[in-house]
Image (cartoon, rainbow, N blue to C red; front, side):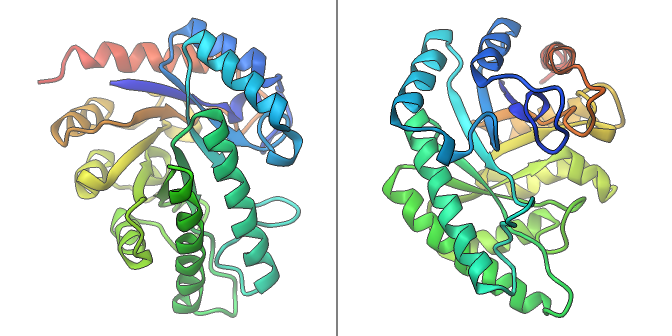
Length: 278
């Protein structure tokens, strides 16, 4: 198995503290033993407008030197401006598409070949059909730009935060309907927990179209801290021939979190479980 760590816990989204420069985060995660890094696209780490060409080259050189490649980039969907691709506001949808394209360009510059897609949320007054069609059109446009940069878009069901793409079946539906071969799917165990679903079932449902997994236990704890059957998740991933990264997206919900401790604990727990796989 390959393991990555999402930088939210080290950044300023959505809780402002603790907060570290991305260079520091790369060095820490490399020494803990991760195979890759998922970069959250918010300040101070990877808001595209804040990273010029020279800085992008500097970051890629650092990651290459530390043996910690950028695996994926994750845009921040909410916040002040709002980046909801299902928004009834045309201006917001246009800004969202433009932002995602900027994130795709940043991903390519940093060597990451995956950008995660949050399909947005149905605003009161819109029908689900209207919201879905808006998000579908947005992801199709984003995917076209991503294909030109050699980047894959991974649709994430986000049941705990949204009301549009909540299940693996809905993610597959959106993937098929957008008609782009470089659009695939992913899932997050935290959102499966929210639905009282079996996380291993999500792995098997998504199957060959699953390119990325977010790992988080109860209340965004590290793997092993809560209720997820991690042995089941790993066994299902092995059974389907999963080739992506299992990426910790943990500890970013509160300033009480110690990101290094989360990173060490989760990695050690999952690596120990691998010995039980058949």
